Length: 195
Image 1: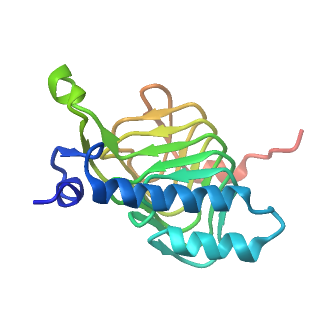
Image 2: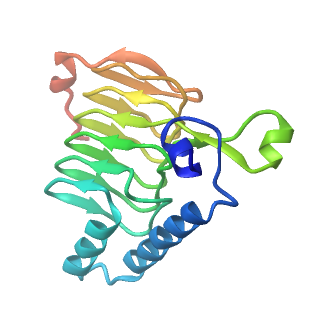
């Protein structure tokens, strides 16, 4: 089994010394660099780079530079996806976003992790578990989503949260560690945000 096959199958793998993975990361980093250096007004050029970089995109996808990822091909973006500045996706495993996902600045989605024991960690071994985000999700500023997490649909994740466990549908969740605070109800539709 190649290191890439191990990576994609939730097994410990060596990303540091594998030529194939290193070359694939280099291609992705170069495309991220090109995207990040493109004039914000040149939407056509930015879109073309994203189409080369990201594995699957739907219509109305907006990424605001800077954006960084490891491979790109493991990322799937649904319709009406919006990400603000400084999004980082370590996509060593699949990272899937549903429709109508809004991501605030300085967020990270990290599929990769390292063994706790020092011997294997110092060998450069890591693992990767997929991340899934449902439909109609708002991720607040500075949120970090860890390997293997599923965030349901109709969810709001509060700013500064570290999401280490699954979050069910129709919830408001925040904290470190992130936890469900309350369900989203019809009463939320009545809140006036006028000051």
